[in-house]
Length: 157
Image (cartoon, rainbow, N blue to C red):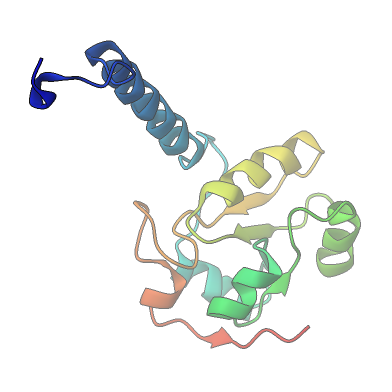
């Protein structure tokens, strides 16, 4: 048999199809994890959140990570509380006060984590949690804080 006709027995059509199916499933999982959960809690645009935070009507909380705060800055007038903190509720109470009915707006990068935390805080008894779904970088909900030319402060540890 000529060398050109010799096939790699490990690379069959079935394996290629299985590999493609696995890649598609992986992409589907990745895509699903990046979609904000559906909720019926109030939402604000980045501009509305900025105006209300400046007026003292809401406490704006940036729930991203310190790495993200360093990379893009933080919304002017916001409190930075990493959502992964084990003492997140205590830190939130220090920023917004102990009343679980106090208006708190959550912002993240693109609205996925803020939607998830909105639901988690509602389950924890907070009744006035507001989502900023366009986030800092923009999403399907809008251009975001940065593209909206809203003031960004440098994060200092």
